[in-house]
Image (cartoon, rainbow, N blue to C red; front, side):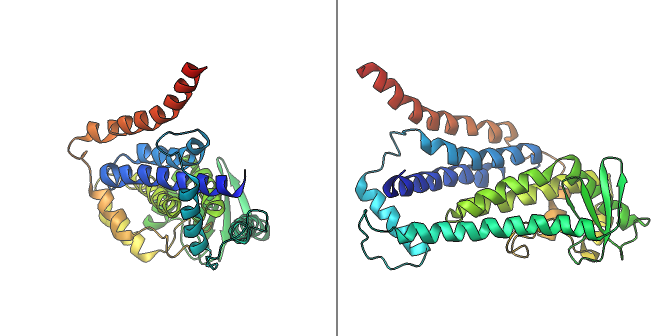
Length: 293
């Protein structure tokens, strides 16, 4: 893949992820379809990377358009927009790759730090998860089957029990795989802003799912009090976890929503015409090529 093809691929991926996120923002955001939304957002990130490998008639990009995309990426990497010959070193690609490498290194560091914390603190196997006591400020949080618990929080009282149920929900639903997958994509394709928006919403969905499992009927007030008293968030994989911390107010509002919104069925099936249109763009050039042959 040469430089022009790379810039074309990135531009196509941005367009597709923007379309997917736009549908989510218009029809699915702040609805109670948490499981549906979770897998829709994961599929959006994956498809926005896979579909540009096909030749889409709508997304056929000329050399002039690719040059324009190149200038945008140059701006993002803060390089001077001076013309660079194809045979010379593509400094903008070097900068993009360097930034991606730094994000990936930070992600690897974060994962290794978690396992180092596990090795440094006492841990007990408790059925489906490993209970690890720590004084870390970010605790409690879970990572795969590991539950890091802050020593200052009592596991016996009501708030402690709700936090425990919340974190066990993250473990049972395997949310760590989602976070790792989305963070890898954001790290490598950091120049696509829609990836970061989708990742943020995916983290919110994780919290909504875990909150629902942790809160019983009529216990929203008690859970809201627990949220205000305890800071925890499962955002240790993010370079700026405070920016992506799920809003407590939004989480409480989502807990009070018990009914499906209007046109619930249409909100879900509205994705089908969008997918049919996108895949139609893929199949049409292939069919036309076969006809010519």
